[in-house]
Amino acid sequence: MVRGRGLLLVSVVAALLVTVGTTAVLLLVDPKQPKAEAIKTGGLAGGAVVALYALWLNDRRRRTEEARHELESEKVADERFARAVELLGNEADQVRLGAMHALAGLASAAPRYKQTVLDVLCAYLRRPFHHPAFGKRPEDPDRAYSGLSHEKRLEEVSAEHDLELVVRQTAQRLITDLLPWGDDPDDTPYQVDLTAASLVYFRLTGRRFGRLIARRAQFYGMTEFREVELSKPALFSGGAFHGRVDFRHGRFCGGISFQDVAFARELDVTGAQVATFLHVSPMPPAKVIGSLEALADVTYRVAPQGWPLTGDGRPAVLPDHVQQD
Image (cartoon, rainbow, N blue to C red):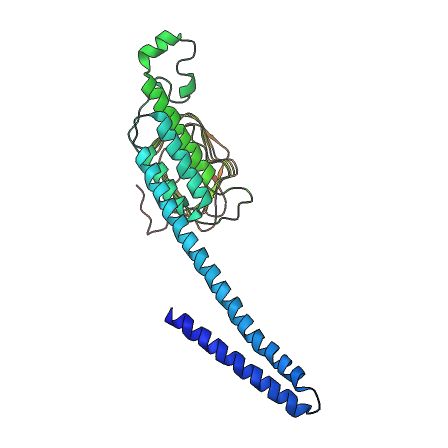
């Protein structure tokens, strides 16, 4: 307040000085002109100084209001986030679904929340879960009970299992929707941590992000990583793919680990590329379609005998500093 009054006083004094100075200069330059005209011109010059101060003051007030509005918006967003996370623990599946959509909407409206929302959705998927269909037909859970009557199916599968499966598949879809793809200019290296998660028909087709951690994860049904692009490592160590796996034309620039990974069905790596490092199990999948292209800077953590590899990155002999598992 004191500073504002001081600036106002300075602007008034400056306006008076400009008025007097302008009038004096005009009279000195042209003594014959009417004094009233000189004073009028000087007054206009002084008024311009006051007008500039008023414009500055108005702009300052506008910025203050914008800052206050932004602060209030952030506070509301934080409250929405906290409430949505709290509702994820609700017993009703429709409430959990609504909470997930609220989080996804918040991440879209406020990009600073995107990684946090991804972390929350991944944390939900890391919760222990087992559907009876996983044990009956893990390569295609949707067809595990085809041909059975509704009554027979209810004897094996509870409504809670089916409802939770729908919620989890919604979380998977929202994770996919939040990750950049196509013409999206977002180049943030988001991290997706699905350690020990149970995933059903998981798809990241065409997505671009940073690191994928899926150690000990269980993939049921067909899994699609077609045309995915990762700038950091993709880690599947100790996991299991119970259905078909599609890695076609994927780019794993940060390296990939298939250490101790079990493949129950075919693995399609047609056109896929890997850089930095490649860690594979000594025993390749029973059926591999296509060849994985190892780029020139690949370091192998184990000898990839039996894996269909192409490219200049394949060494004839492992480097001395690399140990075979």
